Image (spheres, one colour):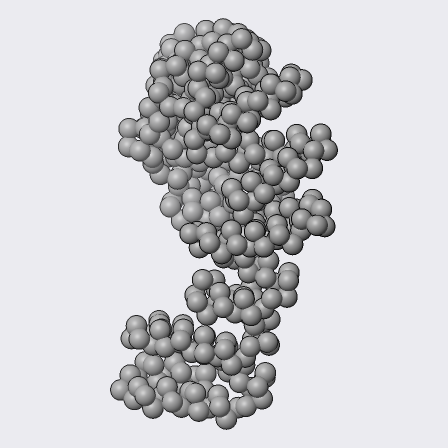
Length: 498
Protein backbone atom coordinates (compact mmCIF):
# COMPACT_ATOMS: atom_id res chain seq x y z
CA UNK A 1 0.00 0.00 0.00
CA UNK A 2 1.89 2.97 -1.34
CA UNK A 3 0.18 6.16 -0.12
CA UNK A 4 2.75 8.40 1.60
CA UNK A 5 2.93 11.90 3.05
CA UNK A 6 5.16 12.84 0.11
CA UNK A 7 2.34 11.79 -2.27
CA UNK A 8 -0.09 14.04 -0.45
CA UNK A 9 2.29 16.99 -0.56
CA UNK A 10 2.76 16.59 -4.31
CA UNK A 11 -0.97 16.28 -4.95
CA UNK A 12 -2.05 19.34 -2.94
CA UNK A 13 -1.44 23.07 -3.32
CA UNK A 14 0.80 24.34 -0.52
CA UNK A 15 -2.08 26.13 1.24
CA UNK A 16 -4.35 23.07 1.09
CA UNK A 17 -1.56 20.83 2.39
CA UNK A 18 -0.93 23.10 5.39
CA UNK A 19 -4.64 23.34 6.14
CA UNK A 20 -4.91 19.56 5.86
CA UNK A 21 -2.16 19.20 8.47
CA UNK A 22 -4.13 21.53 10.76
CA UNK A 23 -7.32 19.52 10.25
CA UNK A 24 -5.52 16.27 11.03
CA UNK A 25 -3.88 17.70 14.14
CA UNK A 26 -7.23 19.10 15.31
CA UNK A 27 -8.73 15.57 15.15
CA UNK A 28 -11.34 16.56 12.60
CA UNK A 29 -11.21 13.20 10.76
CA UNK A 30 -14.10 11.07 12.01
CA UNK A 31 -15.13 7.44 11.58
CA UNK A 32 -12.13 6.25 9.49
CA UNK A 33 -12.88 3.14 7.44
CA UNK A 34 -11.06 0.99 4.89
CA UNK A 35 -12.96 -0.78 2.12
CA UNK A 36 -10.57 -2.94 0.09
CA UNK A 37 -7.94 -0.43 -1.08
CA UNK A 38 -10.12 2.64 -0.42
CA UNK A 39 -9.99 4.62 2.81
CA UNK A 40 -13.01 6.69 3.85
CA UNK A 41 -13.95 9.12 6.59
CA UNK A 42 -16.07 12.11 7.47
CA UNK A 43 -14.06 15.30 7.91
CA UNK A 44 -15.70 18.07 9.92
CA UNK A 45 -14.34 21.58 9.51
CA UNK A 46 -16.82 23.27 11.83
CA UNK A 47 -20.35 22.94 13.12
CA UNK A 48 -21.54 23.87 9.63
CA UNK A 49 -19.77 21.19 7.60
CA UNK A 50 -19.26 17.46 7.46
CA UNK A 51 -17.73 16.08 4.27
CA UNK A 52 -17.56 12.54 2.95
CA UNK A 53 -13.98 11.84 1.88
CA UNK A 54 -12.42 8.80 0.24
CA UNK A 55 -9.10 7.91 -1.41
CA UNK A 56 -7.53 4.87 -3.08
CA UNK A 57 -4.33 4.12 -1.17
CA UNK A 58 -2.78 2.29 -4.15
CA UNK A 59 -3.75 5.05 -6.61
CA UNK A 60 -4.18 8.29 -4.61
CA UNK A 61 -5.18 10.19 -7.76
CA UNK A 62 -8.46 8.27 -7.48
CA UNK A 63 -10.19 10.27 -4.75
CA UNK A 64 -13.37 12.12 -3.88
CA UNK A 65 -14.55 14.74 -1.39
CA UNK A 66 -18.08 16.10 -1.14
CA UNK A 67 -16.83 19.64 -0.47
CA UNK A 68 -17.10 22.23 -3.30
CA UNK A 69 -13.30 22.82 -3.51
CA UNK A 70 -12.11 23.13 -7.11
CA UNK A 71 -9.01 25.34 -7.04
CA UNK A 72 -6.28 22.92 -8.11
CA UNK A 73 -4.90 19.81 -6.41
CA UNK A 74 -6.66 17.84 -3.69
CA UNK A 75 -8.56 19.63 -0.92
CA UNK A 76 -7.54 19.94 2.73
CA UNK A 77 -10.08 17.26 3.74
CA UNK A 78 -8.39 14.66 1.52
CA UNK A 79 -4.98 15.70 2.88
CA UNK A 80 -6.27 15.22 6.44
CA UNK A 81 -7.64 11.76 5.59
CA UNK A 82 -4.36 10.74 3.94
CA UNK A 83 -2.31 11.96 6.91
CA UNK A 84 -4.54 9.98 9.27
CA UNK A 85 -3.85 6.82 7.23
CA UNK A 86 -0.11 7.42 7.02
CA UNK A 87 0.15 7.95 10.77
CA UNK A 88 -2.39 5.50 12.22
CA UNK A 89 -3.46 2.66 9.89
CA UNK A 90 -4.74 0.58 12.81
CA UNK A 91 -7.47 3.15 13.51
CA UNK A 92 -9.24 2.33 10.21
CA UNK A 93 -12.04 -0.20 10.66
CA UNK A 94 -12.82 -2.60 7.84
CA UNK A 95 -15.98 -1.61 5.98
CA UNK A 96 -17.29 -5.06 5.08
CA UNK A 97 -17.67 -6.02 8.72
CA UNK A 98 -19.10 -2.64 9.61
CA UNK A 99 -21.50 -2.67 6.67
CA UNK A 100 -22.72 -6.16 7.46
CA UNK A 101 -23.23 -5.22 11.10
CA UNK A 102 -25.02 -1.99 10.20
CA UNK A 103 -27.18 -3.72 7.59
CA UNK A 104 -28.37 -6.26 10.12
CA UNK A 105 -29.14 -3.52 12.61
CA UNK A 106 -31.05 -1.48 10.01
CA UNK A 107 -32.95 -4.54 8.81
CA UNK A 108 -34.16 -5.10 12.33
CA UNK A 109 -35.06 -1.41 12.79
CA UNK A 110 -36.85 -0.88 9.47
CA UNK A 111 -38.44 -4.25 8.66
CA UNK A 112 -41.75 -3.20 10.14
CA UNK A 113 -41.90 0.14 8.23
CA UNK A 114 -43.67 0.71 4.91
CA UNK A 115 -42.03 2.51 1.96
CA UNK A 116 -44.04 5.65 2.79
CA UNK A 117 -42.90 5.53 6.38
CA UNK A 118 -39.25 5.07 5.34
CA UNK A 119 -39.59 8.07 3.01
CA UNK A 120 -41.07 10.10 5.84
CA UNK A 121 -38.19 9.08 8.13
CA UNK A 122 -35.59 10.01 5.51
CA UNK A 123 -37.35 13.35 5.00
CA UNK A 124 -37.06 14.14 8.70
CA UNK A 125 -33.36 13.26 8.56
CA UNK A 126 -32.76 15.37 5.44
CA UNK A 127 -34.54 18.46 6.73
CA UNK A 128 -33.13 18.22 10.24
CA UNK A 129 -30.25 20.50 9.14
CA UNK A 130 -28.55 21.62 5.94
CA UNK A 131 -25.53 19.45 6.60
CA UNK A 132 -27.68 16.30 6.49
CA UNK A 133 -29.47 17.59 3.42
CA UNK A 134 -26.13 18.22 1.69
CA UNK A 135 -24.99 14.67 2.42
CA UNK A 136 -28.10 13.21 0.81
CA UNK A 137 -27.84 15.52 -2.22
CA UNK A 138 -24.14 14.68 -2.63
CA UNK A 139 -25.01 10.98 -2.49
CA UNK A 140 -27.63 11.45 -5.23
CA UNK A 141 -25.17 13.51 -7.30
CA UNK A 142 -22.50 10.81 -6.98
CA UNK A 143 -25.04 8.32 -8.32
CA UNK A 144 -25.66 10.59 -11.34
CA UNK A 145 -29.33 11.09 -10.55
CA UNK A 146 -29.51 14.86 -9.98
CA UNK A 147 -32.26 16.96 -11.58
CA UNK A 148 -32.50 20.75 -11.92
CA UNK A 149 -34.86 20.78 -8.95
CA UNK A 150 -32.31 18.92 -6.82
CA UNK A 151 -29.51 21.22 -7.94
CA UNK A 152 -31.63 24.15 -6.77
CA UNK A 153 -32.07 22.37 -3.44
CA UNK A 154 -28.30 21.99 -3.23
CA UNK A 155 -27.90 25.73 -3.92
CA UNK A 156 -30.34 26.54 -1.11
CA UNK A 157 -28.45 24.22 1.24
CA UNK A 158 -25.10 25.86 0.45
CA UNK A 159 -26.72 29.27 0.80
CA UNK A 160 -28.09 28.43 4.25
CA UNK A 161 -24.73 27.12 5.47
CA UNK A 162 -22.84 30.17 4.17
CA UNK A 163 -25.46 32.52 5.60
CA UNK A 164 -25.27 30.88 9.05
CA UNK A 165 -21.50 31.50 9.17
CA UNK A 166 -21.94 35.08 7.96
CA UNK A 167 -24.51 35.84 10.69
CA UNK A 168 -22.26 34.31 13.34
CA UNK A 169 -19.24 36.33 12.15
CA UNK A 170 -21.29 39.54 12.14
CA UNK A 171 -22.43 38.81 15.67
CA UNK A 172 -18.94 38.23 17.05
CA UNK A 173 -16.86 40.40 14.70
CA UNK A 174 -15.17 37.43 13.01
CA UNK A 175 -14.63 33.78 13.78
CA UNK A 176 -12.40 30.69 13.50
CA UNK A 177 -10.27 30.28 10.38
CA UNK A 178 -11.87 26.89 9.57
CA UNK A 179 -15.32 28.45 9.48
CA UNK A 180 -14.00 31.24 7.27
CA UNK A 181 -12.53 28.61 4.91
CA UNK A 182 -15.87 26.80 4.90
CA UNK A 183 -17.67 30.05 4.06
CA UNK A 184 -15.45 30.49 1.00
CA UNK A 185 -16.06 26.88 -0.03
CA UNK A 186 -19.83 27.27 0.32
CA UNK A 187 -20.02 30.45 -1.75
CA UNK A 188 -17.67 28.94 -4.34
CA UNK A 189 -20.10 26.03 -4.64
CA UNK A 190 -23.00 28.50 -4.84
CA UNK A 191 -21.32 30.46 -7.63
CA UNK A 192 -20.81 27.32 -9.73
CA UNK A 193 -24.47 26.39 -9.41
CA UNK A 194 -25.61 29.97 -10.08
CA UNK A 195 -23.59 30.01 -13.31
CA UNK A 196 -24.92 26.60 -14.30
CA UNK A 197 -28.62 26.89 -13.48
CA UNK A 198 -31.58 29.04 -14.44
CA UNK A 199 -32.28 30.45 -10.96
CA UNK A 200 -35.86 31.60 -10.30
CA UNK A 201 -36.17 35.28 -9.43
CA UNK A 202 -37.65 34.42 -6.02
CA UNK A 203 -34.50 32.51 -5.04
CA UNK A 204 -32.22 35.19 -6.50
CA UNK A 205 -34.01 37.83 -4.44
CA UNK A 206 -33.82 35.63 -1.36
CA UNK A 207 -30.04 35.37 -1.75
CA UNK A 208 -29.68 39.11 -2.42
CA UNK A 209 -31.86 40.13 0.53
CA UNK A 210 -30.20 37.80 3.03
CA UNK A 211 -26.59 38.48 2.07
CA UNK A 212 -27.04 42.24 1.54
CA UNK A 213 -28.65 42.48 4.98
CA UNK A 214 -25.54 40.95 6.54
CA UNK A 215 -23.23 42.99 4.29
CA UNK A 216 -24.73 46.22 5.62
CA UNK A 217 -24.05 45.14 9.22
CA UNK A 218 -20.39 45.15 8.16
CA UNK A 219 -18.92 43.40 11.20
CA UNK A 220 -18.03 40.01 9.70
CA UNK A 221 -14.73 40.71 7.95
CA UNK A 222 -16.29 38.93 4.95
CA UNK A 223 -17.74 41.96 3.13
CA UNK A 224 -15.92 41.46 -0.18
CA UNK A 225 -16.86 37.79 -0.76
CA UNK A 226 -20.40 38.56 0.45
CA UNK A 227 -20.73 41.29 -2.15
CA UNK A 228 -19.16 39.02 -4.78
CA UNK A 229 -21.82 36.31 -4.35
CA UNK A 230 -24.59 38.95 -4.44
CA UNK A 231 -23.20 40.36 -7.70
CA UNK A 232 -22.85 36.84 -9.14
CA UNK A 233 -26.52 36.20 -8.33
CA UNK A 234 -27.90 39.31 -10.09
CA UNK A 235 -29.25 38.62 -13.57
CA UNK A 236 -31.50 41.50 -14.62
CA UNK A 237 -32.62 45.05 -13.88
CA UNK A 238 -34.90 44.02 -10.99
CA UNK A 239 -32.01 42.23 -9.27
CA UNK A 240 -29.66 45.21 -9.59
CA UNK A 241 -32.39 47.61 -8.44
CA UNK A 242 -32.90 45.42 -5.37
CA UNK A 243 -29.17 45.61 -4.59
CA UNK A 244 -29.31 49.40 -4.97
CA UNK A 245 -32.24 49.57 -2.52
CA UNK A 246 -30.06 47.86 0.09
CA UNK A 247 -27.01 50.02 -0.63
CA UNK A 248 -29.09 53.19 -0.25
CA UNK A 249 -29.57 52.26 3.42
CA UNK A 250 -25.83 52.69 3.96
CA UNK A 251 -24.30 56.05 4.74
CA UNK A 252 -20.83 55.09 3.54
CA UNK A 253 -19.27 56.84 0.55
CA UNK A 254 -17.93 53.48 -0.60
CA UNK A 255 -21.44 52.07 -0.92
CA UNK A 256 -22.60 55.22 -2.73
CA UNK A 257 -19.75 54.60 -5.19
CA UNK A 258 -21.08 51.06 -5.65
CA UNK A 259 -24.52 52.43 -6.50
CA UNK A 260 -23.01 54.72 -9.14
CA UNK A 261 -21.02 51.86 -10.66
CA UNK A 262 -24.15 49.72 -10.87
CA UNK A 263 -26.09 52.48 -12.62
CA UNK A 264 -23.24 53.05 -15.07
CA UNK A 265 -21.89 49.54 -15.73
CA UNK A 266 -24.82 47.20 -15.00
CA UNK A 267 -27.96 49.22 -15.73
CA UNK A 268 -26.36 51.56 -18.29
CA UNK A 269 -28.35 54.43 -16.84
CA UNK A 270 -25.96 57.33 -17.49
CA UNK A 271 -28.49 59.95 -16.41
CA UNK A 272 -28.76 58.51 -12.89
CA UNK A 273 -25.00 57.98 -12.72
CA UNK A 274 -24.31 61.63 -13.61
CA UNK A 275 -26.94 62.92 -11.20
CA UNK A 276 -25.36 61.02 -8.29
CA UNK A 277 -21.78 61.73 -9.35
CA UNK A 278 -22.36 65.51 -9.61
CA UNK A 279 -23.99 65.47 -6.16
CA UNK A 280 -20.89 63.79 -4.76
CA UNK A 281 -18.03 66.01 -5.92
CA UNK A 282 -15.93 66.57 -2.82
CA UNK A 283 -12.65 64.70 -3.05
CA UNK A 284 -10.08 64.84 -5.81
CA UNK A 285 -10.90 61.25 -6.76
CA UNK A 286 -14.58 62.19 -7.29
CA UNK A 287 -13.60 64.77 -9.90
CA UNK A 288 -11.14 62.38 -11.51
CA UNK A 289 -13.78 59.67 -11.95
CA UNK A 290 -16.16 62.16 -13.55
CA UNK A 291 -13.37 63.38 -15.85
CA UNK A 292 -12.69 59.78 -16.93
CA UNK A 293 -16.40 59.32 -17.66
CA UNK A 294 -16.48 62.33 -19.98
CA UNK A 295 -13.27 61.19 -21.65
CA UNK A 296 -14.79 57.74 -22.27
CA UNK A 297 -17.76 59.31 -24.07
CA UNK A 298 -15.43 61.52 -26.18
CA UNK A 299 -16.21 64.79 -24.39
CA UNK A 300 -12.54 65.56 -23.77
CA UNK A 301 -12.83 69.32 -23.27
CA UNK A 302 -15.45 68.77 -20.58
CA UNK A 303 -13.23 66.11 -19.02
CA UNK A 304 -10.34 68.61 -18.86
CA UNK A 305 -12.51 71.25 -17.19
CA UNK A 306 -13.60 68.74 -14.53
CA UNK A 307 -9.99 67.64 -13.90
CA UNK A 308 -8.89 71.29 -13.58
CA UNK A 309 -11.64 71.89 -11.06
CA UNK A 310 -10.67 68.73 -9.19
CA UNK A 311 -7.04 69.88 -9.02
CA UNK A 312 -8.09 73.22 -7.47
CA UNK A 313 -11.13 72.31 -5.34
CA UNK A 314 -10.85 68.59 -4.65
CA UNK A 315 -10.03 67.53 -1.10
CA UNK A 316 -7.46 64.88 -0.27
CA UNK A 317 -5.77 63.07 -3.16
CA UNK A 318 -5.61 65.23 -6.31
CA UNK A 319 -2.66 63.62 -8.10
CA UNK A 320 -4.97 61.62 -10.40
CA UNK A 321 -6.36 64.88 -11.80
CA UNK A 322 -2.82 66.21 -12.25
CA UNK A 323 -1.73 63.06 -14.10
CA UNK A 324 -4.89 63.25 -16.24
CA UNK A 325 -4.05 66.84 -17.26
CA UNK A 326 -0.40 66.00 -17.86
CA UNK A 327 -1.38 63.27 -20.33
CA UNK A 328 -3.87 65.58 -22.03
CA UNK A 329 -1.29 68.34 -22.58
CA UNK A 330 1.30 65.80 -23.75
CA UNK A 331 -1.16 64.67 -26.39
CA UNK A 332 -1.68 68.33 -27.38
CA UNK A 333 2.11 68.83 -27.68
CA UNK A 334 1.80 71.77 -25.29
CA UNK A 335 5.34 71.99 -23.89
CA UNK A 336 4.79 74.58 -21.15
CA UNK A 337 1.61 72.98 -19.78
CA UNK A 338 3.08 69.48 -19.97
CA UNK A 339 6.15 70.63 -18.04
CA UNK A 340 3.96 72.45 -15.50
CA UNK A 341 1.97 69.30 -14.76
CA UNK A 342 5.01 67.05 -14.76
CA UNK A 343 6.46 69.24 -12.01
CA UNK A 344 3.13 69.31 -10.14
CA UNK A 345 2.93 65.53 -10.34
CA UNK A 346 6.48 65.26 -8.97
CA UNK A 347 5.75 67.65 -6.09
CA UNK A 348 2.49 65.93 -5.20
CA UNK A 349 4.24 62.55 -4.84
CA UNK A 350 8.02 62.82 -5.36
CA UNK A 351 10.01 59.89 -6.71
CA UNK A 352 13.28 59.39 -8.53
CA UNK A 353 11.36 58.11 -11.58
CA UNK A 354 9.26 61.29 -11.72
CA UNK A 355 12.41 63.40 -11.33
CA UNK A 356 13.87 61.70 -14.41
CA UNK A 357 10.58 62.09 -16.27
CA UNK A 358 10.56 65.86 -15.69
CA UNK A 359 14.14 66.21 -16.92
CA UNK A 360 13.50 63.99 -19.94
CA UNK A 361 10.64 66.24 -21.00
CA UNK A 362 12.21 69.66 -20.49
CA UNK A 363 14.33 71.63 -22.92
CA UNK A 364 18.07 71.85 -22.49
CA UNK A 365 17.97 75.54 -21.55
CA UNK A 366 15.47 74.85 -18.74
CA UNK A 367 17.09 71.71 -17.38
CA UNK A 368 19.65 73.19 -14.92
CA UNK A 369 17.21 75.49 -13.15
CA UNK A 370 14.48 72.84 -13.00
CA UNK A 371 16.90 70.25 -11.66
CA UNK A 372 17.93 72.60 -8.84
CA UNK A 373 14.28 73.40 -8.06
CA UNK A 374 13.32 69.72 -7.85
CA UNK A 375 16.21 68.95 -5.49
CA UNK A 376 15.49 72.01 -3.33
CA UNK A 377 11.87 70.91 -3.03
CA UNK A 378 12.95 67.57 -1.53
CA UNK A 379 15.55 69.13 0.76
CA UNK A 380 12.98 71.55 2.17
CA UNK A 381 10.21 68.97 2.51
CA UNK A 382 8.97 68.11 6.00
CA UNK A 383 8.44 64.47 4.96
CA UNK A 384 11.39 62.26 5.87
CA UNK A 385 10.27 59.56 3.44
CA UNK A 386 11.45 61.76 0.55
CA UNK A 387 15.07 61.56 1.72
CA UNK A 388 15.54 58.19 0.02
CA UNK A 389 14.41 59.71 -3.28
CA UNK A 390 16.85 62.57 -2.71
CA UNK A 391 19.67 60.05 -2.14
CA UNK A 392 18.81 58.30 -5.43
CA UNK A 393 19.05 61.65 -7.23
CA UNK A 394 22.45 62.31 -5.62
CA UNK A 395 23.58 58.84 -6.67
CA UNK A 396 22.61 59.54 -10.30
CA UNK A 397 24.71 62.73 -10.09
CA UNK A 398 27.61 60.85 -8.46
CA UNK A 399 27.29 63.30 -5.59
CA UNK A 400 28.24 60.74 -2.94
CA UNK A 401 29.21 63.30 -0.29
CA UNK A 402 25.57 64.41 -0.07
CA UNK A 403 24.43 60.80 0.39
CA UNK A 404 26.96 60.47 3.21
CA UNK A 405 25.57 63.62 4.85
CA UNK A 406 22.06 62.14 4.80
CA UNK A 407 23.35 58.93 6.38
CA UNK A 408 25.42 60.67 9.05
CA UNK A 409 22.45 62.88 9.93
CA UNK A 410 20.34 59.71 10.33
CA UNK A 411 17.96 60.89 7.62
CA UNK A 412 18.32 57.64 5.67
CA UNK A 413 19.60 54.16 6.38
CA UNK A 414 22.72 53.30 4.41
CA UNK A 415 21.38 49.89 3.28
CA UNK A 416 20.96 50.68 -0.42
CA UNK A 417 24.23 52.62 -0.56
CA UNK A 418 26.33 50.79 2.03
CA UNK A 419 28.81 49.18 -0.37
CA UNK A 420 29.33 52.44 -2.23
CA UNK A 421 29.78 54.50 0.96
CA UNK A 422 32.06 51.98 2.66
CA UNK A 423 34.41 51.97 -0.32
CA UNK A 424 34.46 55.76 -0.72
CA UNK A 425 34.26 56.88 2.90
CA UNK A 426 35.50 53.97 5.08
CA UNK A 427 36.52 56.07 8.10
CA UNK A 428 33.25 58.01 8.17
CA UNK A 429 31.26 54.78 7.91
CA UNK A 430 33.25 53.26 10.77
CA UNK A 431 32.20 56.26 12.87
CA UNK A 432 28.58 55.79 11.78
CA UNK A 433 28.46 52.07 12.55
CA UNK A 434 30.36 52.55 15.83
CA UNK A 435 27.60 54.89 17.01
CA UNK A 436 25.02 52.23 16.12
CA UNK A 437 26.96 49.56 18.04
CA UNK A 438 27.19 51.83 21.07
CA UNK A 439 23.46 52.51 20.90
CA UNK A 440 22.73 48.78 21.12
CA UNK A 441 25.23 48.31 23.95
CA UNK A 442 23.52 51.07 25.93
CA UNK A 443 20.26 49.04 25.91
CA UNK A 444 21.97 46.48 28.18
CA UNK A 445 20.22 43.25 27.18
CA UNK A 446 21.39 40.17 25.31
CA UNK A 447 19.30 40.64 22.18
CA UNK A 448 20.68 44.19 21.80
CA UNK A 449 24.22 42.91 22.34
CA UNK A 450 23.60 40.36 19.57
CA UNK A 451 22.36 43.11 17.21
CA UNK A 452 25.34 45.30 18.11
CA UNK A 453 27.74 42.44 17.43
CA UNK A 454 26.21 41.90 13.98
CA UNK A 455 26.77 45.57 13.10
CA UNK A 456 30.32 45.33 14.49
CA UNK A 457 30.98 42.69 11.83
CA UNK A 458 30.49 45.43 9.21
CA UNK A 459 33.19 47.44 10.99
CA UNK A 460 35.40 44.34 10.91
CA UNK A 461 34.84 44.11 7.15
CA UNK A 462 35.89 47.75 6.66
CA UNK A 463 39.00 47.47 8.84
CA UNK A 464 40.24 44.13 7.49
CA UNK A 465 39.22 44.25 3.81
CA UNK A 466 39.06 47.94 2.91
CA UNK A 467 41.68 49.50 5.20
CA UNK A 468 43.77 46.31 5.52
CA UNK A 469 44.26 46.90 9.22
CA UNK A 470 43.38 43.89 11.36
CA UNK A 471 45.13 45.45 14.33
CA UNK A 472 42.70 48.38 14.40
CA UNK A 473 39.80 45.94 14.36
CA UNK A 474 41.35 44.08 17.29
CA UNK A 475 41.86 47.36 19.15
CA UNK A 476 38.21 48.32 18.53
CA UNK A 477 36.82 45.06 19.93
CA UNK A 478 39.33 44.92 22.77
CA UNK A 479 38.28 48.40 23.81
CA UNK A 480 34.63 47.31 24.03
CA UNK A 481 35.49 44.21 26.07
CA UNK A 482 37.67 46.19 28.47
CA UNK A 483 35.06 48.93 28.86
CA UNK A 484 32.34 46.46 29.99
CA UNK A 485 34.10 43.76 32.05
CA UNK A 486 31.06 43.10 34.26
CA UNK A 487 28.60 42.44 31.44
CA UNK A 488 28.92 38.67 30.80
CA UNK A 489 26.28 38.59 28.04
CA UNK A 490 28.10 41.39 26.17
CA UNK A 491 31.45 39.67 26.67
CA UNK A 492 30.03 36.43 25.27
CA UNK A 493 28.44 37.99 22.15
CA UNK A 494 31.42 40.20 21.22
CA UNK A 495 34.02 37.50 21.90
CA UNK A 496 32.18 35.32 19.34
CA UNK A 497 32.94 37.80 16.57
CA UNK A 498 36.45 38.54 17.90
